[in-house]
Each structure stands twice: as structure tokens, then as C-alpha cells.
Amino acid sequence: MELPPKFVERVLRDLGTAEGRALCGALDAPPPVSVRLNPAKTGTDRLPELFPEVLPGGPGGAGTPQDASGASVFSGSAAFSGTETPPGLPQLDVAGRVPWCAGGLYLASRPQFTFDSDFHAGAYYVQEASSQAVGHLLGGAAVRGARVLDLCAAPGGKTTLYASLAGPEGLVVANEIDRRRAAVLADNVRKWGTGNVVVTACEPRAVCDFEAWFDVVAVDAPCSGEGMFRKDPASRAEWSEGGVRVCAARQEEILREAWRALKPGGTLLYSTCTFNRDEDEGVLERLLAAVGSEAAETEERPVDGAWGVVCGRVGAFRTYRFYPHRAVGEGFFAAVVRKAPDAEGRMRTPRAHRAVFAPADRTTAAELARWTLDPGAMRFGTVAGTCYGWFAAQADAVRALSEALPAIYSGVAFGQVFRGVLKPDPALAFHTGLNRGALPVAELDGPTAVRYLRRQDIPPGELAEGMNLIAARGRALGFAKRIGRRVNNLYPNSLRIIKQD
Ligand code: SAM
Image (cartoon, rainbow, N blue to C red; front, side, top):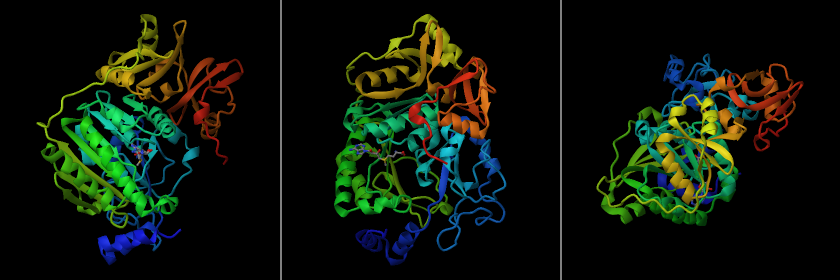
């Protein structure tokens, strides 16, 4: 399908003929494939050593993807020789590091992610490269221990990144207005396994009634999606000028709500995957007109010229544009601003609608403690008969949120305790703080792991009698129970692979 003519017309007008044509050309080239590793499951800190920024020979080394004209899509980015593999992920055909994200990797080819057990284990998230910049643009360290609101969060690409950055002292509230998409978000949060996320499914207004609550508010706004024109060609048919106007009005509304939720001194990150000025700079201008001197500059973030990112300013906002003909990634716009420390706004916690949490009794808490590496850092309780653990540092915040909002997941679901014994919830297998000493671990080979993930029968082979943690390449996938020669595959039906080979 052709690019929408009105879009092409506008781009040539806004960017000039040469630049506009380069952009349209890039939108017709194949998109690069990229993933972001889960640091807790892959030891991402080894990446710089494995993939130095630019190896001798530079871009264009073995395995470097090429665009339609045969040119390397990695010119201006990190390049890689293709002889190393990321920690414990030999199946990924790595082409280079995403330069603005510590765990980001470009792949030379697109594997069948569906049949990779590490994909299901939450070892990495398939995420286009430009979006991976949000951590860097926020100043990664500032997110550690912070309370982050990700207001438009599904399917969870950025949520999982914030969760890794926030750590156990921090909390990410991942909100998604669409309930069906919120369920997918919750699945991805469980798999990522950091245990520091609350997933809510409501309108921005309801979450933002938690006024001046958050150190960081991220609005990855629903938009006209021009930046997705090559990755998702169907988005070309959905685009219209009227649609752009509707999106811009909605974005303005969401940003006003976001501002209420932000603490004085906190940071707002606004992003879209569109090139449209009305949905990008225009929306920022309208927010600035409303909040006046409450908006303040953030510290400058280093942006290497070789990344191809176009930096700009809109009042106190610092803006970053990722054009696919300049940077190796999809079209993306991000802007960062601070709420002035002396801005008006006292913290306000909405009233609880219902009591959700019941404390765990002593026997139950002792059983749950056995399953976690750091029981002292957790608080245990039950919600509708299922036992959960929440990191103590944010447990009161989780409770306040869950009692006022429709929270569909929070912390770590441990499972149900019967007569002092835990029947583990599938989510516990993914938790990075799971104590593997609590039960036998059965390591499956690749084909048997796929059978397990399809929820098919697996041979009793390596399984011990009773409950087992099922792993492949050392990474946990779920649980199975052996009773004599029979194995009960406890992988959740909702997650099972249904695609045929
Ligand atoms: N942040 C996500 C990620 O990185 O995976 C992508 C978010 S997507 C660009 C925007 C999300 O906003 C969609 O999931 C959409 O359902 C949601 N949305 C749609 N209308 C909305 C509204 N009026 N208020 C808040 N969110 C909305």
C-alpha cells in the first residue's frame, strides 16, 4: 500500500523536498529488528564487553541488515561483527547494540520468536529501537527507586523498561484504558518478573486523581502512528487528517491529567510514534500555555551525533525526534520536562472503595517466605484467595492504588496455600526473586520446551515426583507436577503457543 498522499504532501512541505523524500524512502524499506534484554534474566552488564560500540571495520560487518537500496541500515549506529552472542542467548543473530539503551540489540534476521523459550521466559522483549530511548532520555538513574506512572501502557514495552530501571525500591503503575489490552500488559508484566508493577485498567482521569503522587509520569500517547507506516503497513490505511485532529485533542486531555499526577520536582515524558507537529510540538505548546511557570527544564541528556537523533526545544521541553532515514529505528518523538519544585500541588490519595488485601497468617507467610530469595524485603497478603508478595518499600502505595482503582495485577502472585503448602501460581515461575531451592528444577531441551509451552504432554524424564519448576536454557517457564508416570502440565492455557510450525 502507498503512503497516504496527504501525508507525503505534508512531509515534503514540513521537512523540505530532499529530507521529506528521504523519510518517505525509508518508510518503504524493511524495518530493523530489535530486542531489549531483561537485565535480571540475562546479565546485560556484560553487553558492552561483548559488543563494543563500533567494532573494527565499522558498520556493514557480517550480518548487517540492509535497506531496499542495499545500504547498511546500521550506518551511524553501533555495529557488530556477528561472532559473539548475548549472555546465554545463542539463538539471537545479533547485528549490533542499540546505542541509547543498555540492553538493546539489533538482530540481523527476525527469528520465530513464538518458538523461542527465552521469549516466553521474559529474557527479552521484542521492542523497536527508538522506543528503547525513553530510559536514557529520563536519565536512567533518576528512575531507580522512583514511583513511575506509565499512563498509556499496553502492551508493556516501556513498562518493562521502567520496571527494570525502578528496581525493588521503586514502583511502576502501568495503566491501560482498554481492558483487553490491559490483560496483555499484565501477561507481559508477569513474564518480565520484576514484581514492582501495578497494572490498572482505567481512564487517565481516575489514576491521575492520585495527585502529586509520582516522580515520573510517562505518556506514550495514542497517536496517528505515522512512525509505524513501515513496521505496520496496515496503519497507512487507517491514517487520515481528521484522525490526526482527534488524536491531538485526546493527547492534550491526557497530558493535562498527567500533569496533576506529577509531584513538584518530578519529570514528565511525553512520546508518540508520529511525525505530526500537531500531535507533537503542538500538544506541548498547549500544555505549556496551561501550566505556565510550573514547567521547568530538565538536565540535558547526552545525545551522540552519530545516533542521528534530532534534538530540539519547545519552551521548557527538550524534544528528541527519531526519523527512520536518520536513526536506526522507527519514527518516534519524545519530550521531557520537569514540574518546578515550587509548583502548586499537594499529594492527594483518593478514598478507598473497597478493602482488597487481607494479611497472610503466620503459617501462610512462613510458607511464602520459603519461595523467595529475600523474604525480608517483601510483605505478603491475599487477594480473593490468592497469595501475593509486594516489595515492602511500596506495599502501602500498592494497597492505596488497589483499593481505589481497578487493579488487575500487582506485585507477584505466589499462588494458593492449602494446609500450609503452596500451589504456585504460574507468575511465580517468572519472578526474578524466586528461590529455586524451594522445589526441584527440570531442565527441558528445546523441542520439549515447545511442547510444554503448547501445553502438550511432556515425558516424565527429568521430573522429580511432585511439583517441579520447568526451565529451558536455565530460564524458568512455569510449573508441572509429576504423579508417577503422569505429568500435569500447569502452563496457563491463556499463554500457550497455538501457532503451528
Ligand atoms: N506504551 C506502550 C508500549 O510501549 O508498549 C504503547 C502505548 S500505545 C502507543 C497507546 C495506548 O494508549 C494504547 O494501548 C491505547 O489503548 C491507549 N489509549 C487509547 N485511548 C486512550 C485514552 N483516551 N486515554 C489513555 N490511553 C488511551
